[in-house]
Length: 142
Image (cartoon, helix red, strand yellow):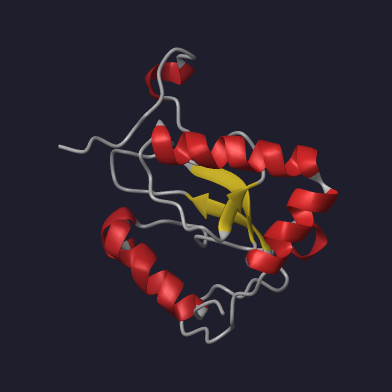
């Protein structure tokens, strides 16, 4: 169902090439006790990403003269079956995930896969200008 993590890393490299941005942490690892113990995302990985997996996505670029800005948040992979289960059994959780997903798609204009769901309100959100609460970065369609 899900592609291997090698495909994920190839796609990630197209957006933020490690050679240029020198990111220090992986673009995705598991959460809680197994956070760093068993991440399926690493160079050369053929691990399969599956429905129900929860990832903390860390993107911490370390480009000379541009250190300090990073993004870190949590997402879940959910196939149609898991989506139905969450929608029916955890409607409050479903509503929060959908509200955030719609914000990411409609306000920030970031394509997010149908099977990917943010688990917190900070996914894909970055405040520039010394954390000014009245501004957030968004994608322009120009």
